[in-house]
Length: 454
Length: 76
Image (cartoon, rainbow over all chains, first blue to last red; front, side):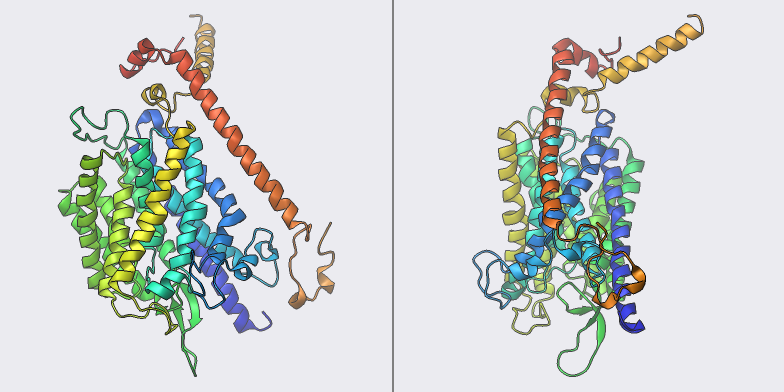
């Protein structure tokens, strides 16, 4: 910070990530609006509060241990020397990112840690918020918030450390490539939600006695539409936050400054902007056709299209992004209805499909389209390949997503912390505790009647 | 208490943390973690109590039938 140019680079980077945080805040607003729009009147406030309160809970736990996990675990389980420092837990890298590290507070020698922490935190909110929508109208807040912390401050952070870190073992050994988080955010959150849904069960009335699924239509389609538009908007921040804005990518002699992906491999902000728009378009076009113009699925397919292309959107040609997005939407739409009928899964907002299936698809397809590309500037790392990507997708969706979601939901259920009582589900979650409010309202009505002599 | 008492004599290139109570970070973190755990315990108890009371007062078949019809048995 002792000359204007170096100060400009540092402060530009600080501002760059700050801006992504503000944009990504819109994702959470969008998710809240979307969920409330889908829920029935009797559950509106509970639905809103369930998603809102994950903000402070995931924030503080990400501060307590989530950030440390990202930096300490890139070697993975039982993998030695993935990053060339002897293997195991990387206490050295973790130490600077503990909650008691001096650089977590105002510090004149570090302007990046805090804002980088915040950008990661907003990813954490997104992971938890994806799960939130699928379980509405019948989950206890106490159980959901424990699950939200698990996915937002533990599980996705571990997968990011493994596969979304410049030296994560999956990148080193498998050639795993997931530039804009098809797997590390979306597939894991979708898989986690599916694991919970298996234990939680459907809402009353979702399935007929013969097992035929019934639609529980969104109560407020306008709120759903605005919510999804806001999620699209916030996704710009999500994409930009996945990049490093300025990095010398030239190995050997010479200097060449470029934006990079999270693996420090070069890309451009320009390219990912085009690909974002093309994959959004591919998703919307395919979603409109396959759902026969259904607004709910068309909007959701726009999001699913972006997610399906995200793993490789740093390198795809725009037409590739468009086509992959469309194919991913057809895949997730068909699989959603198959799983719903086969396993009686009530995913209220289609989150498992939009995030889980589309994310899984995105990771796998990138292995074919980007086959042979280097996964990192480090030439000793494995290159991108279909098998590595497929194993990666299984790890994201199944090992770190579905399995912990199912096990934790089972545990919470055994303690009576997962599902609300049947009577409360019929009354509506907003009814619980509202008796006193109704009585107080009646007192005011009586007073008004008395005032007019009636 | 104050980590910085005079900006005018500070050499910024050598300056590190500027928040109060430098050196007591671990104590602050552990107190916050304890408060977080207590929050969950209190919230779970509060939520279960609310549901139990509501079911006890209005969870009978007659009240639930009224609610499904759109009537509210809680209105005095």
